Length: 127
Image (cartoon, rainbow, N blue to C red; front, side):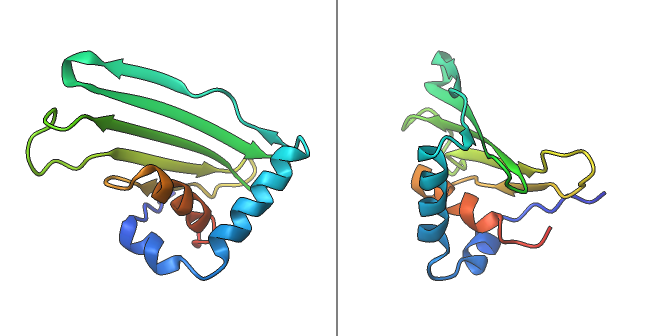
């Protein structure tokens, strides 16, 4: 199985008007109705590198996939000039083993708000 790995350009190209607000609205409604599973994030601190990493997961009951986001950030001056910061990966996978569609998105250089937007858009990409 070849796993698609869209990057920022593919995510931006797939964005269409209304997609993100509609996805956020639907997710908030599902969460308010108690139809989401959103465990507490896992955090790792890297004091020597003046950085950290967090892993967040979520699933909306009945949706086609669940999401795992891994992101790390490092403070100014803690990384070599020209390095990609923040680093990030988004995994969408089906909750049932009968499905094989998995998508991994490269969120390197994408900020927190853009990562939320990317999550909504990646769901719309063919996988």
